Amino acid sequence: KAGVTQTPRYLIKTRGQQVTLSCSPISGHRSVSWYQQTPGQGLQFLFEYFSETQRNKGNFPGRFSGRQFSNSRSEMNVSTLELGDSALYLCASSRTGQGIEKLFFGSGTQLSVL
Amino acid sequence: GQQLNQSPQSMFIQEGEDVSMNCTSSSIFNTWLWYKQDPGEGPVLLIALYKAGELTSNGRLTAQFGTTRKDSFLNISASIPSDVGIYFCAGQHTGTASKLTFGTGTRLQVML
Image (spheres, helix red, strand yellow):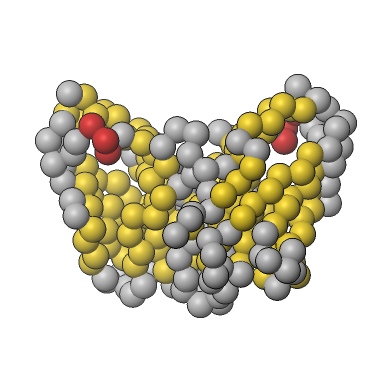
């Protein structure tokens, strides 16, 4: 069974640009959540999607957005990039995202903003 | 955003030694999870704990859910070189399984 797949693995952008990251969850998993990891703030929850709807949201500005498709694949978009957006962006999936389910993480997309 | 307090922040140990680390929170969690992350990779789930006082093992790893529900502990016995990495605790509330609150991490380095 394939794990959580994130593309691309690495991205380099400049300030002011926008970026789109992609995540394919484990087959059968319908909940996809996104996390940002930085040396200073650690792992922080961005948002969660289930059935093509954003169900939970962390404390990030509106420049961070996402969506989920009918096949549960998800994309995350960051507009007007800032230097501080440089981070490892991790996607995680679970069956429903509720109860006490285990989350499984992808390898992440390393974003560098110059 | 909130992070749970993990200690120690980092540790160097000799191969074969036992390792202990802990995680504390100011709030209660229903589930405690322990993850390991290798450089450039995503966290991999090691152990999940669901009940206060629960003690669970996974090979050489043993974790405990604190009785106050505000802390958790991880022990690694007889460490080996592949134990190198960053260990994170994470707290989870029932009903919002996707929204984990992570600890600050413990970096483990094993000396041969």
